[in-house]
Length: 305
Image 1 (cartoon, rainbow, N blue to C red):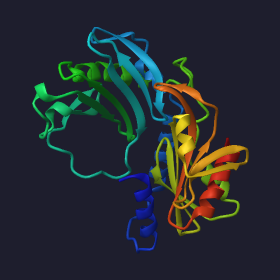
Image 2: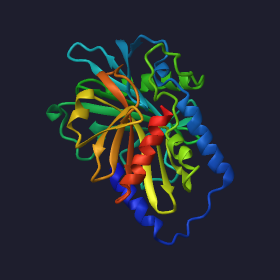
Image 3: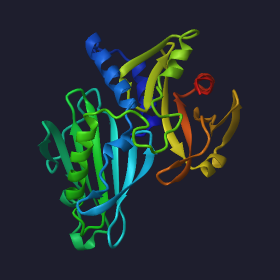
Image 4: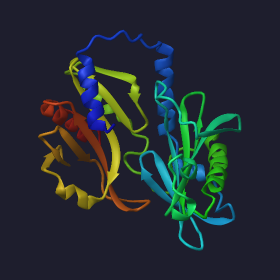
C-alpha cells in the first residue's frame, strides 16, 4: 500500500469505533527511544573498515535514502549492488511469512533470508537476468538491520550478503555515530520527522502514535480528524520541475499537487548521493480536503530547517 492510500485508510479509521487496547507507556517510550537511537547511527559505517567481501573489492558509495547506504562489489562481468539499511520494525506482526523464507541465528539474533532464486514462481536460472538475496536481522528491541545484494544469476549473492551481514552486525554493536564513515551526511541525517508535528501543538491538537513512527517518517492526527504523514527522502533535482504546484514557503522551494494535498519541501542544497546529485526533501501528505493544514505543516517543516 502506498503512503497516500495508507493515510486515506487511517483517516477513515478515525471515524470508526475502536476497541484497540491503550499501548503500555513503557512500550511507547521504548519504541521512540529505539528510533531516536537508530537515527543517530551512520549506516555507511556498518560496512566497517573492510575493503573486500567474498574475495571481491568493495566500494561504499554513500546514502541512497535516509535509511540506507549503498555499495558496489567488483565483479568481472558487472558490478554487484549492495545495500545496508536500518529502521524500526512494524509495531504489530504483518501477516504470515512465506514458507520459502529461511532463518538463521547470527550472533544470537534471528535473521531471515530471502532469495529470489528460491521463490516458488522463480524462472529457471538460465532465464534469469538478475537475482537478489536479502538478510534481515530482527533485534529484540524491534530494530531491523537489512543487507540486500543484487547480482547476475551466476553470482552467489547470498554468500556476499551473509559476509556483509556479519560485518554490519559487528559494527552495529558499536552504534557508530553520524560522521564515523567520513562519507557525506545531509540536513536530514539524524533529524526527527515528528518535529513539524510538535511545532503545531501551540495552536492545534496533535496526536502521535508511536506505532506510526519510523526512522524517517511520522504519521499523526490533527484536531481528531485529519491525518498527516511527514517523511524524508532524496530526489533528482530535475524531477522537481515537473510538479503541478510550485511554491515558496519561508524561503524554501515547495513542489507538489494542491489538488491532492501532497507537497515536497526542499530543505537543503543538492548533495552527492550514491547515484548522483540529489536534493533532500521532506514530503507532507494529508488526507482528502486538508490542503490548508498540509501547507501549515509544510511551513513548520520550512521553519525546522
